[in-house]
Length: 235
Image (cartoon, rainbow, N blue to C red; front, top):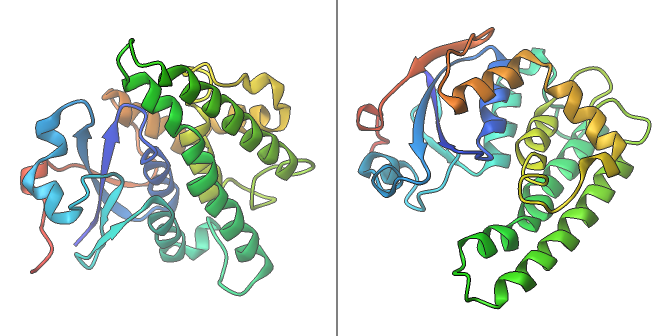
């Protein structure tokens, strides 16, 4: 059984797992959820895999559901050790990767949540301005930390090639400017890494998948599967 990733559009953090799967060379399929379509988000097959209705969600090659971006990315890296997407547990490289990925998955991702909350609020809700200010402060503080982490480094956790932490950075940092929370030009190390990632075939593939345009895989992509044809976990 091939790995199947359930991802959401538009601009989902599941973008990172698409790029990581493409880099891994593992055989995989994708299943698409339209975040703005309630029927898609509440599809029974999707909820059978993740009752929370959140993406990404992974059906592993063994048919077991795996949830949460960090767990999914570490799983992909561990299944393709020869690709250098991660490190063996207990090594200094793994400790750095785990620390950076934890920061991205919790602090950085969460920094954007007040802005998303403000965007959904009615115009009459005076709290929206407070939420936006909170998001601006949190996002810029997080970007400043990432700027320090990237000083003198090509990638967040590797010296040779992008890995799963960089994929998650690409998935989340792209929210900053459209939401008018920060200028990436103020963080030249972050901007440099993001610009380099945008030339990477795996990142370009993930963008094409999200946009629904022809996507040219250099990995093990086997196509999309409709939600109602997902192989559901036993029990």
